[in-house]
Image 1 (cartoon, rainbow, N blue to C red):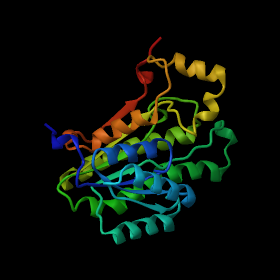
Image 2 (cartoon, rainbow, N blue to C red; image 1 turned 90 degrees about the vertical axis):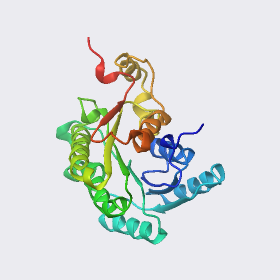
Image 3 (cartoon, helix red, strand yellow; image 1 turned 120 degrees about the vertical axis):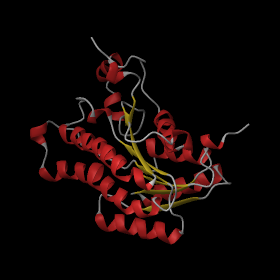
Length: 258
């Protein structure tokens, strides 16, 4: 017998960075669990194509998309104007949009490192604030921030990326405590190397790939769907007593010793 604690029927999710990689995998996972989805991403052409594909793949679900760069304040405002125009107050927010340029600390131009923080941290904070009055309309709602193992230990992604993700994890803990009384749970997932367009470059280097795999007890690269499953769990009624947590989806990377 189907248990509603393991489904999202009747709920609406807003997913940023939802047109590719982990974000798209999360969208598919949520749709499969019965949620309707509002998705946002920067590239309008790709977004329209993804929207059409998802509508065909999940004909029983509502899938609507809006092109916005959430790192830009005016576009964040436009996104939430659109969300309110849809008449659907989200039950779920997935902050997935992120960016990175990997360099040695002394090689960043100021606009580069500030841009990483703008997308990975400041945009997520502002989106949480925009979403708050909509999420609190429901007796129970959930936010999942997509962090990174880079925010938990040193990884060769560059200092600004790691620092921005560490701050995102702490933001998750703070909001979880502050908004618990409003029925809003706030959690995070922290992926290690996942097979996406962004990781294709470094993983194409045989020596680098082998070194990464050597630090991963499970001995393989993760898939976007594996991160999506963890994120979706944190949205389920079955996770109703889980808040302020950061779940690593890393094949054991963070637990690896000598």
